[in-house]
Amino acid sequence: MRRIAGPISKTSTTARPQRARLWLAARLTVLMLAGISILTAVPASAAPALARSVASGAVQERTAALASSTSGPAAFFGLGPSSATKIDNRPYFAWGSTPGAAFADYAAVVNFGTQPVTLQVFATNAVSLAHGGTGFLPQGRILGGPASWITLHLPGGSSTVHLGPKSQVIVPITVSIPKNAPPGDHVGAIVASLTSSAVAKNHAKVHLIQQVASRTVIRVSGPIHPQLSVDSLSVEYNDPLNPASSSTATLRFTVRNTGNVLLGGKESVAVHGLFGGSASVTNAAQIPIMLPGGSTTEIVKVHGVYPELLMHGDVTIKPLVVAGQDDPGLRTYSASVTFWAIPWIPVAILIVIVLLIVLLIWRRRRRRPSPAPDGPAPVASTTGVEA
Image (cartoon, rainbow, N blue to C red):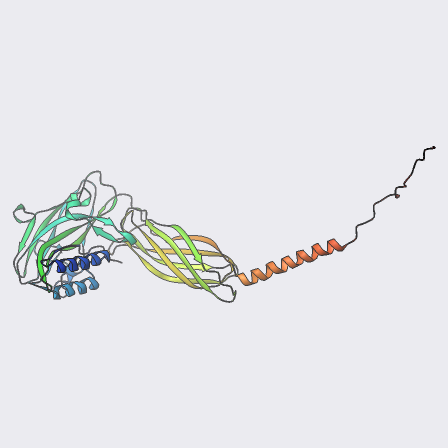
């Protein structure tokens, strides 16, 4: 299951020398276009319960590379579910409730570093990204949704938390579900954010917004409908000239979460021919756990497909749910499409044979003498006129 929770980051730069400013701006532009998040995460060895809500190893490696190119103390902090006194083992905030109910919980905000930090802590909403992924809205764009149901009781009624070195703060949480909240899963996150700056080796000043998010999943009771649909299924097949050789069938399709709960799946693809031949890719890819209304476009290549004229492409998706959830009514979702796979050499030979037969029949009919007409032959008569 692909993790929903994850860090979010933004980066901006200013440089003292003009050349360094242009160089750093170009570099950060390339990084942002490539989708690389620059952030500081909690080491897994320091807090297992919190490490599950931070970045993947690839992102952490890029973070280490950035840290090596800058001077100044590194900040290591995290956020995750807790009891009133200590961190617990929950990987994320999972709440179930009826409409109109209210309940309480706790979040631990931890500073693992040797320097004090002041963090902004806030609740936000999840949004669907391309390829079925999940992201979280920045603080200035949060409107309504599950974020408005969550109240964080920070010390002194502030929007920030000040943490000394190697310390933690337990933040009480109150969740109030509206009476008109629709049934199903409502996803957001609780975010800890740090604004800081560092100096790179080229003396450019880099301003960083480092964020760690721990997801919140609120399941409102009522009719639960786990549902995936497979739409826009099409096949591209490169017909081989030799019927004894195979080619590749490329299947393209869109998987949508049309239900009201978080749902993903494992996809399998198969191609079947008119004469019994088949080729398949089992567990071709894993559809990420998508938000209700989310979608992803998949492309799967099936090799070793022999041309058998009329072919069928089939897609099957076995559902995957969020760990710890039990969704009733789960089933396998599938779709099928028909396409032509033509072996051109035997088809061309068959066309030539048919043309030769037609030509022979036509020439034969042309050489055959015409039959004599029925009845006596007409007698010519002349009429003379006397002079």
